[in-house]
Amino acid sequence: MTRHAIVDLPDEAATLALGERLGARLRSGDVLALVGDLGAGKTCLARGVARGLRVADPDAVASPTYLLVVEHDGPLPMIHADAYLPAKLKAFLDDGGAAWLLERGGVVVVEWADKVAALLPERRITVRLAPRSDGRPGRRAEIDGPDELDWLAHV
Image (tube, rainbow, N blue to C red; front, side, top):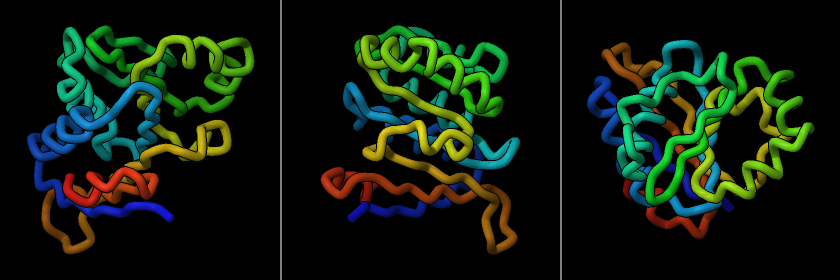
């Protein structure tokens, strides 16, 4: 069974705030899978997560598409990965990257996670970002996570 939450995000500030609330609750070993079309707000949400995790420079969080994986130092490090080019990420994981990620500790945030869902742990939090269906500006976040994370219902 999973927890489910829906959050309306009228603007970028709300997206950052949601990320910050999530980041403040995440623990070492957690995986946050971000799903959404180009421009949906995945990187903005990741920047908010970095703020919540209190990484050294959260405003430096950028889309890691061409870097693949970026580690952001902090009390609880954030490993920010991008699966836009899924073959590239799969090769990284197969060539020892999976072991490296486990050794790092911290929280792993994966953009375009739907492209590598089979490679991600079953226990993860998934955030799907999409335009609002009511025609109003902004986006909607649908969040699913393990049942034991009762705080998900209150993000």
